[in-house]
Image (cartoon, rainbow, N blue to C red; front, side, top):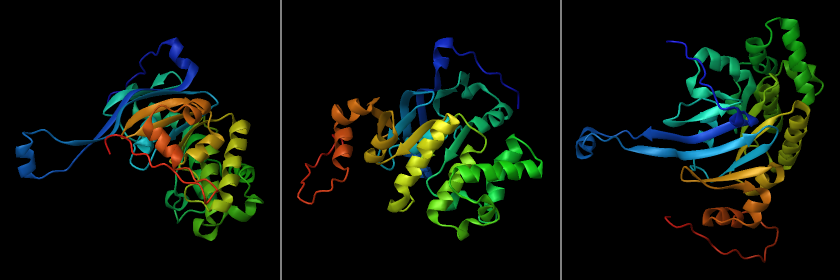
Length: 295
């Protein structure tokens, strides 16, 4: 495969850490022989992401909200280049990711990390916690065992798993769900990234520890000077941590704005429906059912 060089990006675009331009991802639908004849060779596709554009400023928490199937997690994977887009481009810190070679992309991986929704599924059950967190250290920082262990123990302490020596040789099944999520956070931050894509990071955690995990993420954001793309279906959680919010519906962005713009002056009926779905601690409160046009 030939090596590609990054296409020059105008200087004005480099003020943002991430710029997403007209991003599309269409997944072809499997069909039989008869269907292909009836469709006259046209291959139907699911438009998971359909023309999405936004920017993420350095140091902010940018929320991407929507129900399951709206395309928000696919956007996160496209930004990380875990998926290749059907159309559009992602510019990370002035570099157009669609124009660089796989080798150059591997070098950028240390600056772009992800926190997945299910910590048990994202941790290798045959690896100790020290091995799991140390894996990216060995790839991007150092292969010396003493230095790897030192880096891993430091990040374990920072995420609240102390003393680190007690957790270093444990396996994922030997700790609680909340502790596993702290391990996933530690693994994401151990290479000191610039961008962290947090894909429903507290959805699998017990209600009792969700606020603690969010507070930890915000504390680490300040300490490591991080930028978050915070993906969630819960607008109440997004309001707690985000600086700006984008709302996705059927693969498109229906609203982007500050907290005040989205929560107090939302213009799209789908956004208002999501806001109405936020639980209210009042058993006498009755909601008005909202159904966006097209449902």
